[in-house]
Amino acid sequence: MYPGYEHASRFISELGASGAPTETLIRFGTFLPAGILLMVFAFAAAKVLPKAAVTTLGFGLLAYNAFALAAAAFFPCDLGCRPESPSLSQIIHNLSGLGGYLAAVLGLILLGIQARNWQGLSHLFPLGLSCGILGFLSLLFIDPGFQYAGIAQRILEMCIAVWTLSCAWSIRKYRVPA
Image (cartoon, rainbow, N blue to C red; front, side, top):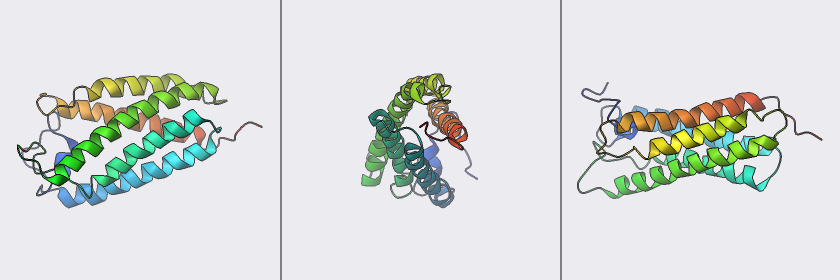
């Protein structure tokens, strides 16, 4: 649907950029609903799991990442996402995206560490740490000048998704121990 778009080198946001052929579909059919659903997950999971400041902070950081994803629907990047003179929307998009990604990797690491204390869910400990660390390393390569920035971004997104889905699956019938 987007002639010339290269997944390996281009950002996901370019699919929803102002003027892109896939703009409306991606912004309002993907970024907004995914952000909302991920926020709902973060708040629901924080309520189900044992109460602790680290748990609340970790899920709060994941919720911020989800909020930044939803915000991309309203603050798209400029066409190509690499303008010499960025619009206000591009600036907001970049700052919220970077903040969201940093929050996500820190949240994954914190939740991974905290999972050691979740009875029956300790398998989320190594997964959270692995996803958080790999996500952080990927974040270092999300640079418009890097030839494979698109791959780096997709690895980071995969880390967030793998941990989120694993956590959701694991806690679907979880009951806080008495």
